[in-house]
Image (cartoon, helix red, strand yellow):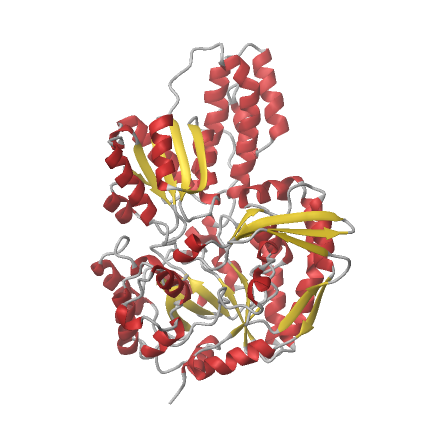
Amino acid sequence: MISHRERILAAMRGERVDVIPFVPRLDLWWLANSMRGTLPERYRGMTHDEIARANGWALYKMVPDFASVIGGPEAILHRAIGLYRFRQAVYAWEFGGDVEIRVEGGGGTQRVEYRTPRGAVSTLGGLSEEMKRAGASLGWTQEHVIKRPEDYAVVGYLFENIEVRPDPRSFLAYVDEVGEEGVVAAGGPSLAASPMHHIQKEFLDPTRFFLEYQDHYGLMRDLAERIAPYFEKVLSALADSPAEVVLWGANYDDMLTYPPYFEKEIAPWLARAAETLGARGKLVATHADGENLGLLDLIRDSGVHVAESVTPHPMTKVDIAEYYARWRERLTIMGGIPESLMLEETASEEEFEAFLDHLFESVAPGDRLILGVADSVPPGAVFERLVRLGERIEREGRLPLAGGAGRTVGKQHLEEAATRIAREESAADEFAAVRGAVVAGDTDSLDARVRELLGAKMGAREILERGLIAGMERISDRFKTGEIFIPEVLLAARAVNRGLELLEPHLAGERQRETFKVLIGTVQGDLHDIGKNMVATMLRGVGFEIQDAGVNVASEEFVRRVEEDEPHILAMSALLTTTMPEMRRVLELLEEKGIRQRVRVLVGGAPVNRKFADGIGADGYAPDAGEAVAVARGLVASGS
């Protein structure tokens, strides 16, 4: 009888197997429920691997288990610069050169200082018990390592002096432990696919990265070149290792790792890893759990063998049928079941079953497919749905599937979403140059144009509304349709901010129109900020007054701010299924305080959908920053 390991490897190679492999990732679900004491009674006292075995499922061993490291706390001490020591590593690394490391703090938060001959840099971050209860295992970074231009050289010194040596002992022990019940993927140099991707993921917050990429590209390129030898050393160790599968790179999104950036900074290293490791008989997987609409062809053509943790519609824009149709000839899809379908709050029983019906209809003949919950089984999952999922795969996943033709998005639509469209300014009025400077993100040009209009005695309010706000509205529309990406939005916002600085003294003397206030923040337990920042940027650009509460905002703090600041809209973001319940908690507290009717509540974030928003009593839901502008305007216009 074929084993789980043999079936998974065959599917990764594109060979037809007897039944679609089912490999659910349980580690985060298990961690959160173990911490809370909420594991199903029949599984209490069991590890997540034991639970998988009890149900006859393969063991998931692709993304490193961040709760399982080598050497205790020291193994994750350098997580804020993207360096770890995992059981799945086939190499060991150490800082070379003259590097002194100082550590302060404990209890979940640590400041790590790196002193080198080029200067000193530091990080602040950790992993709290609260985050573990929410299902987090990777930790968070409160202060990133690059805070000023001088820090680039210091970080470059750290990485160009890292020493790497082959050491597969822990990996081999892990492989023996898993046996025939799963495939253990060896980890790459980090969770990034390339040196520049590493800088983006680890060294700067997401918003600042794009501005630095524009303003200090030379420093970034030099740093990427100094990180490259570390990537090369790890690639060599992987090529010589006993690993059958290597996980290289993770976390792509067609707005964050937008198509031109992906093609320039990420795809070449994916191709290099795939070619080098493929020549040694190894399979290369990459963790593609984000919004891939604009990246479909780039990921397909990168040379990797497996796209892992693929998350289709309804959590993203790409239907599972489209993924299968476009990728099946070149790479294996692993994942395919959106985690939102495992939650009662975001999917009914009918929706869960309908998705599975559509899945089996759309992926015929069923080869090059390994099913699992993407990104992972959420802590609040209805576990019986996972059991039923396994049963349906066993019953209906026998190959070849008969199936039918699933609905696809269409090549033209995908190409349009991945391509920037240059549009000419059609309005030939005196504010066209201001709008054009906003759309181009040209701060210097906008500065000059605004000064010219003020010198010509144009009203500041008119410049604001017909120039700055009108320009930002065009940015909002193009962002919503996928014609432009996050960097263009941030550059446009920076130009608008410069214009506002010039106009503010003049606006003070003019009659003010009503300004609507938005209190925005990411809910407690969630440290993601790029989505929140994008919504705040868009809303500010079209005239809303923004009060940014930040990330990891306690429910009580949201309520206090609503009571004291009296915003017209409360906008809340959650990027994790584990933190979505905090939105309901905020609404309940607003009701308890008797102030629910004072404010309109707008919610959003990757796992949030309209069903969830309606279920908790929110007034509005926006799937992205572009849509948030239209929804917010509708809320203040209708008062509901």
